[in-house]
Amino acid sequence: MEGIKLLIILFGLLFIIERKPMNIIFNFIGLIVSVAIILGKNNTEYLSYLLIIIYCSALTIIFGFVIMLTPFDNTKTKDKKIYFLIPFILFLTFFLFQDNND
Image (tube, rainbow, N blue to C red; front, side, top):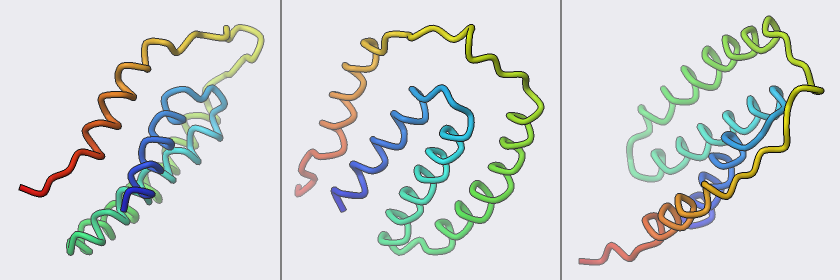
């Protein structure tokens, strides 16, 4: 289960950081499938099926069309620093891996 949580963190951060449009789509698909796996393990199979069907099919196709229609120029993108994400990463990691045995 913690491996899936690490995948969610990884795909979520790559979805935010990545600059290439096709890599953004692949990270989005990985993120949604990882969340659907966790929902499937928590006995909410219907919701996990809905996530995969709605997000991974319909919204990814729409997102792909938007990317294809948007002009993208590689020369204008600057290498932005991502230091502002470090506190968020630490908080998210602590929140996901805390022990919930009350």
